[in-house]
Image 1 (spheres, rainbow, N blue to C red):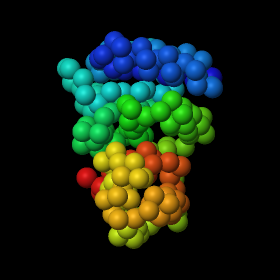
Image 2: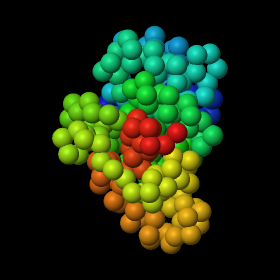
Image 3: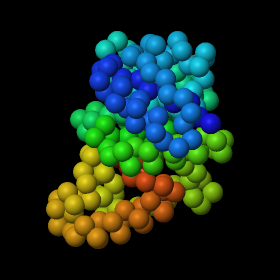
Image 4: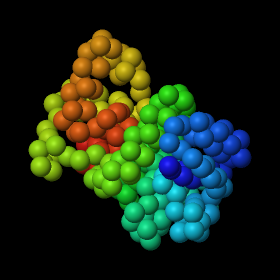
Length: 204
C-alpha cells in the first residue's frame, strides 16, 4: 500500500499525473502539491512512499526542494519529472539524493513501470544509489566507448532509433548496447541507467 505525492506547479499537469498515478497497482493514495515548499512542509505529516517532483517550478524549484527535503529527511524517496531541456536540473537533484527521473512525455506504461520499480525498491528497503545496487561488490564497471555514447544519447532524451541515427547504428544494435550497459550498471531501465550515469559522472 503506497502513497504518492505529485508536485507540479501546473494545475493541468498535476491533475493529469495524479489521475495516471492513481491507476497504478499498489498505489492506494495520491496527493498533490503545487510547489517544492509545499512538499517540504507536508512530507513530515503525510510521509508519502514516493514524491514525483517537477524540476522546473517557481520559488525554490524542484531541484532545490529535493536537496532540502532529503537533507531534512534522508529516507524520503524522490523521482524527478522533467522535459529534455531540464536534465541539468535532474543531474543536480540526483546528486542531492533523488532516485531517478521520468520524462513528462513518457507513455503511461513507461511511467507506471518506473513508479512500480521505485515503490518496489522502497518496499525492499534498498537505499543504494538511485535504488540500484552496484554489481561487483560496489566497484564501478567500465563501459565501452559505444556504451557510453548510447548512455549519453539516453541522457539527452533520445529514443533508440534517434541514437542509432546519430551513431550510424541500427536500432537493434543500440538495444544490444543498452542491454549490456544496463547489466553492467545494475539498472532495470534507461531512467535508472541515466541516473546512475549522472552519479558516476559518466554523463553531464
